[in-house]
Structure formats: C-alpha cells, structure tokens
Length: 416
Ligand code: ADP
Ligand code: ASP
Ligand code: MG
Image (cartoon, rainbow, N blue to C red; front, side, top):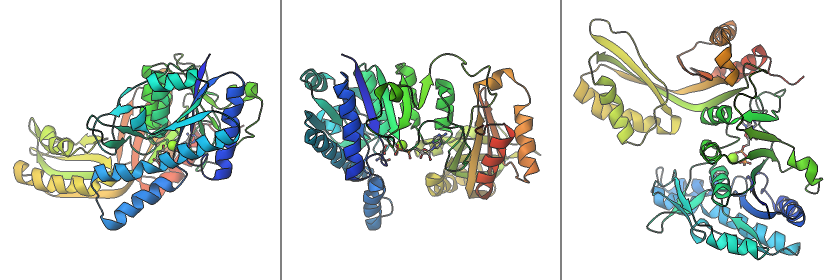
C-alpha cells in the first residue's frame, strides 16, 4: 500500500477548527487506501510565544533549555490531531521525536537529523493506524531534546518520507504553491506548477521561507517527490484534483529552460554587513578574519575584498542579522589585536535580493538587466554575488520591497 507523508504548517494547525479540517483531509486520504504519516508544526504563533517567554527571563538563554521549550508546541499539535482523527473514527497515534526516535546531532536550535528509526512507525501503519509525528524536533545521543532550526518541520517531513520510502511528501501550507516571489510582497506573483530542485534549493537558501532549505536538500538527496499545496481548500475536495494541485519540485533537468529566463525572486531581510578597514594585503588574511567568525559558529554569506592600495585593503562580509552583535564582538577581540587592521564598521539594516533561474545558463544580459532596473529605481548596490543560476545583491533594507517589485516586473514574472 502506498505511503504518503503530509506536513501541515502553523497556520494550517492554527485553531481547533483548522485541526478538525486537517483531520478530515487526512481521513479522506486514508479512506482512499493510502497509508498516512502526518507531521504537523506548532499552532501558529506558538513557537514565537514560548521562545519569547524564555527571552523575557534572559536575552540569550541556554540553547539546550531553549530546545526543551521550543519543541513543546509541536507536542500539543500531534496530540490534538490524533484526538481529531479519533473523533472521526480513525485509529491514530502520536509520537514526539524521541519516541520514534528521530536522532540528531547535539547542535541545539539548529540540529541535523542523523537517522530515523522506522520500526515502530511501520508496525503502526501495518495495523492500519495513522501515525502523527512532531515536526521540528529530535533527540541527540545523550537523550537531550533538540530542534532543527526555525521552519524545521518541513525538514522533519521530507526526512521522514525518505526514511519510510514514501511515495510522495505533501507540504500543506497557507499558500497554494511556490510563487515567482512571496505573494505577500508582490500581489500579482504567479504560481509555478513545477520548480526544479536546483531552483528551489537556491530560492530556499536565499530566503524564500516557503520551504526550509534542509527539506529541499533531503528531497534532492533522496529524490523524494515533494509538492507544496494549500491546506486552506475544502478538505473534502476530490483527491484527483488535490493530487495535481500546488507546485511539484521537479528533478528533471532544466524543465524551465524553454520558459522564463528567471524563475523567481527571493529576498532575505535579515542580513548584516561588517567591514574591516586597512587590512594588510598578504596571504592568510581572509582566514585570520573569518576563522574566528566560523569558530563562533556564525555563518558568513557574501564576501568582498577590495584591490589593495599601498599594501592595505578593506574586507567586507555579511552574516545573519541575529549574529551581528556576536560577530562584531568576535572581530573586535580577534582582528584588531592580531591583524593590526584599522576601523571596523557594520550595518545591520541591509537586505539581500536575488534573481534565480536555470534559464540564466543559456541567456546573457541578466545581470545588466537587474542592475539597470535597480539603478532606474535609484537603489544603490552594496555587494554582489553570483552562481550559475542566481544573482544576489545587498541593498539598504528600506528599498527591499521596491527592489523585489521592480525586478519582478522587469523580468516579466507577473501573473497574466
Ligand atoms: P508554514 O507555517 O506552513 O510552514 P511558512 O510561513 O513557513 O508556512 O511558509 C509559507 C509562507 O512562505 C507563505 O505564506 C509566503 O508568505 C512565504 N513565501 C515566501 N516566498 C514564497 C514563494 N516564493 N512562494 C510562496 N510562498 C512564499
Ligand atoms: N514550529 C517551528 C517554527 O515555528 C517549526 C515549524 O513551524 O516548521 O519554527
Ligand atoms: Mg514553514
């Protein structure tokens, strides 16, 4: 019997009425003869609320304790959904991550999944039960509860689908698919019927939070067919319609090649930039600046080193905004002392806007069109980075939405 994994996000689980609708949809799939594992998120706002409680007590709480707290939202969701399914006469059982178990490493608040045991879940499925597993959480070697980073239920769902060799993983959310850009920023964004795995990976890594990037990596590594679709439609809509709705992540190479050059526009509001002035231009400098940043577990994204003048240069890089103060402290402590550089300055009010598309490989002039569009809007580009299928620019955060709208229009991405 084919197994399908369903994932429901926070809005989809946002009230007991919504949970009853989720139960109706899941029961419909089960009635149609599928084995079903459901991976829900916490009810919307709940994870923020409980993390907020911890931060009322201390600005920078112990990550282990934070995970203990943050993971509880999903535990409420699985129990409520199991009850809602039982109320419909279905056999349903809920599990926390540690009960499966979903084993992770010990990087609290950003743990990585190491293995998922399928024994208990398969036994339940064989008995005709619907199995509901908490998203977002796991357990480390020592038995500590861990979480997978914000938005991590997507990753739980795709990883569980891969471990159980599901036929497909369906990510139900509050939009009806992946759009050319966030439809909340550009109202005439267009829904994509398919998006290539590579493009989805870039879009997720560049800030499109519709899927957590690690879920896309799992989908790619295990070639797990994954579809993004709406949980807000009639839960009893015909299955034949639902199966082909939303956006399918496609593994076929370059399916979009003959279509648009640019598939989508991604943005990330939460960037910060740091510049070290007067750095001696000699071997090992980049390592000496960025080594201590990496040791502090801070991810570096864009990097620029200027041409040197009289043996001195400037070195600029970006980090997630949440790590800005920490990065500044690390730089002040290490770089100034050991490298003998001049001033360090930073700007925590910058955003990154990126155009993405596999069609870029076979088209020239995308960068110049992007830069011309931004110039026409009077938007200054602070940094640029490129890959084969994306161009990203760093700009002042106050122009971010303007830039996204202008680029969306310039590349003709709007709905017909
Ligand atoms: P969930 O709680 O279901 O996981 P999220 O809020 O994490 O939902 O992700 C869905 C949201 O992602 C949408 O409401 C939308 O605002 C946002 N989003 C960002 N970029 C895109 C995009 N390219 N296509 C669709 N949604 C996007
Ligand atoms: N509840 C978690 C969060 O808010 C995980 C998720 O929703 O995917 O980040
Ligand atoms: Mg999400």
